[in-house]
Image (cartoon, rainbow, N blue to C red; front, side, top):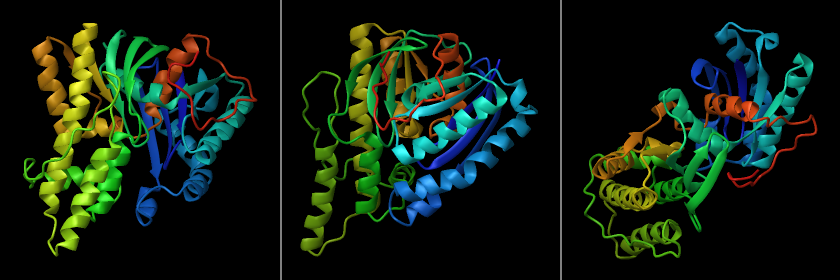
Length: 335
C-alpha cells in the first residue's frame, strides 16, 4: 500500500510516498529555515505563508518522483498535532482536500509518533516493543513503544526541550540558527571540559530539565562580558553539548536498564547529534541492548516518517473524517 504523507508542523513543507510503512518511494522537502535564520528562530506567520506557497508543488513532486497518481494511493496521511497551529492547519486542510478529491482515506498522524517511525525506514526489521528517546526543538520524551500505535511516556522535559536549549545557547554564542548543527560544528574544535556546567535536578527518575543549563551558559557569557573577557565559543559549545548529551543518554539508559529493554532507539532532530549517538551506543552495548539510529536525513522534520506511521495508523483503523482539525498540543499516548 502506498501512503502519501504531508508534514507542515514547523518550517519544513514536506511530502513523501512510503510503501507498506517501510519502503521509501519519494521524499520532498521545501524548507524556510534560511529565511527563519534571519530572525534567529521560527516566525510562525512566515512559516505558515511559506507552507501555503509550497504545499501543492511539494505533494505533486512527491507523487511524480514515486511514479504515481493520487488514484494509486491507499491513503493520505498528515501531521495533525502537535506543532505551530497555523502551520499545521495548512497541511491538514491540503490533505483533506486531496483525500476528498481522490476518494482516499484521511489518516491523522501525531508528529512525535512520526519521528519514532523514521526508524522503520532505516531499519526494516525493527518492530515494537522498544524504548525510544524523542528529542527535538519542541519535545524531549523517553517513550516506551509498546506497539505501532501504543505508546507510554516514561519521562519528559519539565521545561525547555533539548533542541530549544541548543537554539538559545547558539544564539547566545553568536552561532547561526538552527542551533543543534551549529553548536555541534563549533564543538568539534572545543574542549568539553573547559567549562563546568551544572546538571539540573528534577523530580522523576526519567524526567529532564534544560532551562537551568541554558541559563548557566547565558550567565557565563554575560559575566565574561562584564569582566571584559571573551568566551571561548568552541570550548563552551563543546562543554554544553557534552552536558546535554550526557543528561539525555543517562536518562534513556537508566530507563532501558530498569525496563529491561532489548532495543533502544533515538528519534527527532537532536538524534542527529554525534556525541549523543556515541554515548547511547556505548551505554546500550554495556546493557546488552540493540541500538537503533535513524538515518540523518530522517532526523529532522520530514514527510517520510509521517507516511510510515500513517501506514500503521491506517492498519489500526485510525481514519479521520473531513472535519479533522489541527491541534497545537497533544500527548503521544492519546487514544
